[in-house]
Image (cartoon, rainbow, N blue to C red; front, side, top):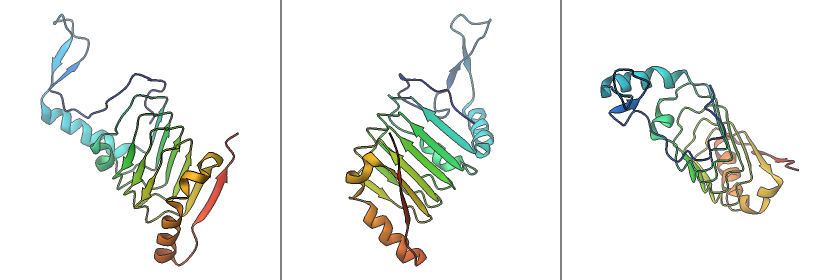
Length: 177
């Protein structure tokens, strides 16, 4: 499943926290339709566990990912974030099981508590200063532009991986030109 791309003005994302949602309704001028919070909760619980791939691209004003996304996406295998310049952190995705790809997210500062992620691809994130809590990480792919900034956190990942798995973490360089 993919969300729409090229949404540069999208700032906030929440799941069913509002009592009203807007829809076409010929009976009302403003198009508002009232929904019960329990209906919204039920819809969220049935949709999010089915999500396997989520790609957000060119959502440059998006500031945060909703907490529920990390909690309820029990089958999520891949999360791809491209051009989300105001997104500061990816945290607490307990079920994300394969790949986290982050490209051109200039505001990204923190990646943490992703215990099942096995592959991390990062480039174009000059402010990324904390990467931790990736206990299952097997492959780290870094863009050429990430060499200096990653020197702050790669040694910690390598040491943690060596302690947990008794072998070196595979670190690769992505050609970003």
